[in-house]
Length: 189
Image 1 (cartoon, one colour):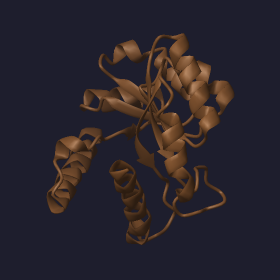
Image 2 (image 1 turned 90 degrees about the vertical axis):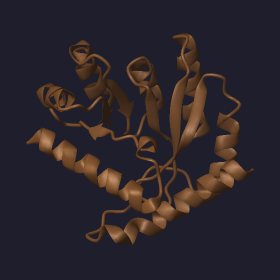
Image 3 (image 1 turned 45 degrees about the horizontal axis):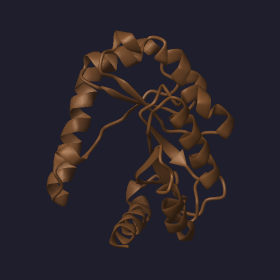
């Protein structure tokens, strides 16, 4: 069943890419494995998945102890990251998706330097302006990206957002369009 579900998702990605004129190789599927036992990660791995997203440092640390059972598998930190937890996760993930302050980026930079690495990050933008969500405001993005680009051991790969919970996903299209425009505008500068 898991293999069928993964195939279904991959087919939907391919169809969406075809409709939008994108190359499917530009899309990275991340299996959100938070709260799932390692055995389910292993099943997804055996079905072909290699990238797993976790939102809690403790879960990454526990699952990372067994990553050698999944050669080529990697973890992404997709949840809010506190600065005091960066040291625990810096050597276990290939990307941090939730950078929402220069201070956090600086701590990541320092910890990446300590282990002789460079960390890929995404800047989290609260496009919908929800008080219950993390992320910076749209008008703060350019400055944060500019400041992060000065850090030697951090590489800003792009922007991310968490859209509001809605019953009709089409209602969220506006937020992703706005995020895309922010990205395009940044590249143009």
